[in-house]
Length: 202
Image (cartoon, rainbow, N blue to C red; front, side, top):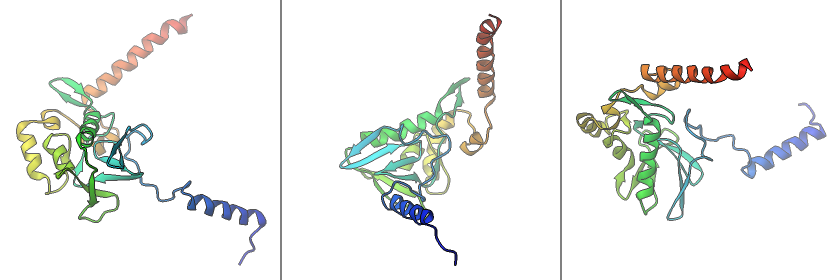
């Protein structure tokens, strides 16, 4: 067994102190890619519970990040196309979840998902299933059977996502875009290039 130097002992003591004090968290929950940092999300207080809405399915409750089980939503910054116009459906999903939380006067009642997967929860607010409400509004997509009926209702009524063209969030994060999104980006690039030309000529 190798001997520890004075410096390595001191480093070990400092690291242990940081971990014990919560300054470093080696088990920090991953944040949804494309989502704003929790520092940017406004804090909502409900009966002593502090809630931050990170994106359409991600919450930070009293400092712990969790995701709603059984659904997926567009991510912040993602756009969908409705009637030939782009809409910020990722931000709309985030706003929809924030509204559900904000309108409640009681704390969220969140329990681990039946699947037992770490970080996934089922949340009720005043007796209503939060994920199911998002699916009914067309702001979230069901990933299993639990919310299939709610999704069918939203599809029939063409609510939210079901009245628009959109790319699944995992594909959007991988770089896939709607044709209208690509054209918007190309137009922005052309405009920026045109604005730079006069200054470059000076």
